[in-house]
Length: 103
Image (tube, rainbow, N blue to C red; front, top):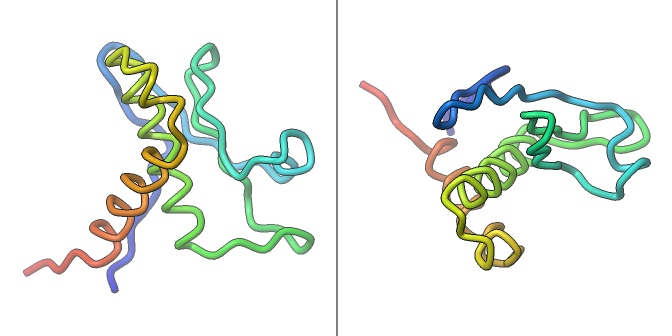
């Protein structure tokens, strides 16, 4: 399995989107990740002693929130609200990124 590095910032259309890790996201919102459109952010719960997360958890959360951003920007609001769809696509993207083999 290869290593996938979660970026600190990405560009989606004209929007720079910062990726931030927070220690208290689950405590504040009961979520492992959030797509924050008004703040141009993807927030991900950091691994803490009280809420340990693996690299795979972080990568799948990143792709999950990235999918929300993509669906939001492409105005696919019904799909954006479909958490099962977003989760399934995100898991496949995470699997592809983590299983990639390079020459």
